[in-house]
Amino acid sequence: MLVRLLLITVAGVLVARADTIQLKDKASVSGKILAEKRDQVVVDLGYTVITIPRSSISKISQDNAPETKSSRNNGRFVAPVRPPAAPPEAEPTPEPGSLFQSRQGPGAEQSVRELVNQLGESVVQVRTPSGLGSGFILNEEGYLITNFHVIEGETQLSVEVYHLKNGQLDRRSYKQIRIIAINKFQDLALLKIEDKDAPKLASVPLGDSDGLAVGERVFAIGSPLGLERTVTEGIVSTKTRQLMGDLYLQTTTQINPGNSGGPLFNMRGEVVGVTNMKLAFGEGLGFAIPVEAVRYFLKHRDSFAYDSENPSTPYRYLEPPSRLKLHTADSDEEGAR
Image 1 (cartoon, rainbow, N blue to C red):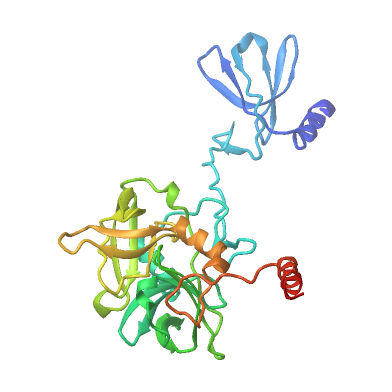
Image 2 (cartoon, helix red, strand yellow; image 1 turned 180 degrees about the vertical axis):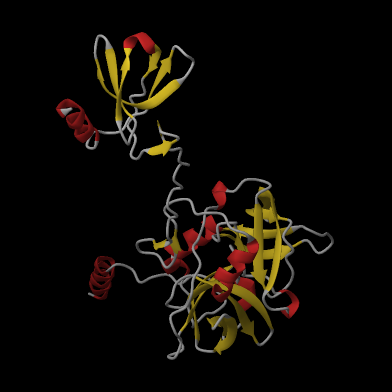
């Protein structure tokens, strides 16, 4: 009796293991083998310990894989079956020295309906005296991306942001907009909302267009022909459509005037392109600038910094290093002598 109690106590601290003992009468017992002797086997069923004579056993199948938890089924010890745990979804994080954020791991795919509700605040309208386009917020400080052709030749800009309040989108217009950088060759522009009363703004993460697959679903949010908050969905037709010397994403997502500068999203809510044009004589032939071009533009924005003294040029060349300026001054003095 003392040995039996000792075995039960030990069974409470040992790591559970599912062993199966096949009996000669075609029955079986599942539990954890505590001890194997020459004439008997001691088995823990979870709620009690039994001793089975060797003469009644036809086969013993042992499972050495440890289990974290046991369950009982009709008096038998049964290992629980658990589905594999899903990997935690990576949260968007800012990249060092940049104005944007991106996920460090794969995000979970969602439906267009779910994503539109999450991303609605981050897609904006960019208005100029001559027209309008779309854009998207990069960070809470108010930096945003749009197309260069949306603001080309314009300096009086306004941005309409849709703030989410009590489950409803409340439109608000901001008029203190500064042009930070422009690249007319890639058709990209970086703006910043500088209104003093502007709150922290909702933003969207940048994805990876290189990881897109042909046939993958994508969708766009914008204001085609002034119809604000329009959502269109399609697939990636090709990732390497060459037009005017550059590579574009081609998509069946409907793109119209007013969509320009808006985001093209994947089903994880990441920006994979900037919509900027379509073929006027066809349907389902839209094009977007790959997000890799946006990343390059943002990381090298000093080279594309906007010069207010010459708005028609996309470049502002920085001052030469001080050592070079000193050498030039010395050369000028020697020439004067």
